[in-house]
Each structure stands twice: as structure tokens, then as C-alpha cells.
Image 1 (cartoon, rainbow, N blue to C red):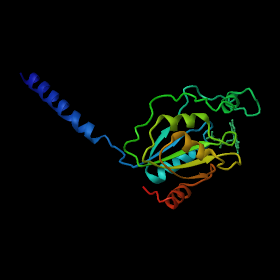
Image 2: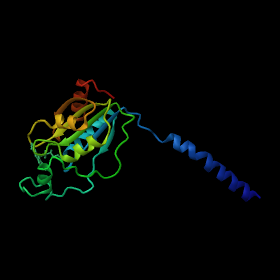
Image 3: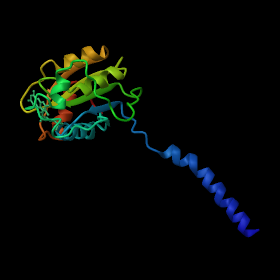
Length: 189
Ligand SMILES: Cc1cc2nc3c(=O)[nH]c(=O)nc-3n(C[C@H](O)[C@H](O)[C@H](O)COP(=O)(O)O)c2cc1C
């Protein structure tokens, strides 16, 4: 009988704990999402620092088919990235689920410059999610190129949202550099 009572007590505790644990799962509560694509890690580093400085959530655009070194060889006109760049309609598939943007009013989008433009997979992202009503800013990394028309292309492809600015950062950018930039756009945690 004692054993049965102990078992019932344990079960009661277990069941009563479940909703408590679920309720304690922290929702970040942030209104900012930092989205990025990075093939070799440079943009990823910048994105992580931006998210850290703004207490924002992070979403990585992961290609269903990862880019190999051979894919990234821009000296080879037959490499995967060269072929994708030469095909404006190409939209490489994104692995996993797309983020639910409902909780965010501000979305940063980070990418490396490829052939003076955004990688096609980023175009795929902005076409698949609904950016209506969102404030957007892009950040990018590159060997030396500037923004070019990359942000305007994303804006056209998305057809929604208010696109503020695009800015280049290097791997040396500090958290403070990124939050200072965001502040100039009126974006704070
Ligand atoms: C296919 C390809 C095309 C690139 N095109 C350019 C370019 O037009 N201008 C430039 O400055 N850098 C270019 N780069 C260099 C990348 O923009 C740079 O290395 C970037 O920081 C990489 O970011 P990631 O490490 O996040 O992938 C290119 C790189 C690749 C792989």
C-alpha cells in the first residue's frame, strides 16, 4: 500500500510538473530576427555578433545541398555557383523549416556577395516568406565589392516590407560596431 501511494505521488508530481516545465521554456521575446546565409563562415560570424548585440533571434538559411569548395570556385565557369549565378530563375532549395516571422517587426538579412549580387538561395528565402509590414536591413560580407543592386533585387523579389539599408562588414566587426549601425537605423533591442 505504501508502495502504491508512493507511486501515485510520483505520478502526480510528474504530471503536474509537465505544464510548469513547458511554461518555463524561455521564449526570447525579441522583436528582431537576424537571418543569414554563409557558405564559408564570414557572414555567419557577423550575424552572430549582430544577434548577440541586439538580443535577437537567429535563423540560418541552410542549403539542402551544401556548397563544396568545388561549388564555390568562381574561377570555374562550370562550378555550381557559376551556373546558379548565370540562371536568374535558379532557386536552390532551403533545408528544414522556414522561420515563423509573426513575432518580429524587424528582420536583418545577411549574405556574402556572389558576383556582385546575393546568392540565389537568399532570393529563394525572401520569395518564400511574407515580409509584409516588416522593417528590413541587409548586411553583407565580400572580398571588396559593395552592395551593388543586391538589396534592391531582394526588395523586388520579396515585393514587401520597408527596406532601409545595406552595409558591408568584415570578419573583424565588433558587436558594438553592429549595434551602433543598427541604432543609426533606429533599431534597438
Ligand atoms: C561564388 C563566389 C562569388 C564571389 N563574388 C564576389 C564578388 O563579386 N565580389 C567580392 O568582393 N567578393 C566575392 N566573393 C567573396 C565573398 O563575398 C567573401 O569571401 C564573403 O565574405 C564570403 O562569405 P561567407 O564566408 O559568409 O560565405 C565571392 C565568393 C564566391 C564563393
